[in-house]
Length: 260
Image 1 (cartoon, rainbow, N blue to C red):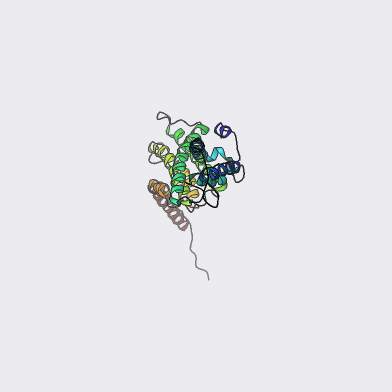
Image 2 (cartoon, one colour; image 1 turned 90 degrees about the horizontal axis):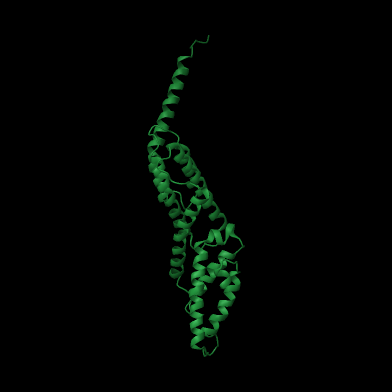
């Protein structure tokens, strides 16, 4: 526990076995249900359980950094299993599914904020209201690319461990994107009305969201569509007009001669 709390990597399976041994002693595992445990042992066990719950919640919240790219293999899944074991009141009564789901939900809500703030620091992007519209758009497009990369990594390396709670992972992704949404909206508000420069941002995000079964037509995707509807409609009208003019000019250059 001391090593793990100081950011040393400790096999969660080892922690699981150690905790299970302590729990079986405190709660009793004799067939006749009779066991002896001192008050001091019970108090020490309660302290260990509280510390372990805090440690595991911290690891789950920082899953991208405690288990980068899903490594060590299976460690995040083992951590979630241990979390469920520690939540048990004794060695026989299973944890209600809702209790475990609430813990995971709370951790993933915090994780969305942590992951986005870490991403901002990594990208070295500072929101500057005095910056030019072009610079702010450039920053938000780069930030959008990084957000997509983070979500793709989560799906590739961590989704299996959270497979029991796919809805919570979808909520985590939406919460993560909602933080990006604030920066995106502020950058788009300063763009010229008649500019097409922001269209690549829509294409980038929409191409990713429409292929994701959990995020397609979700809250962020719907906001993105509503935001760019005027621009897309103008683009379609412009293309329609351009094609019509091209066809009309082509007809004007045609010479019709009867073939005998």
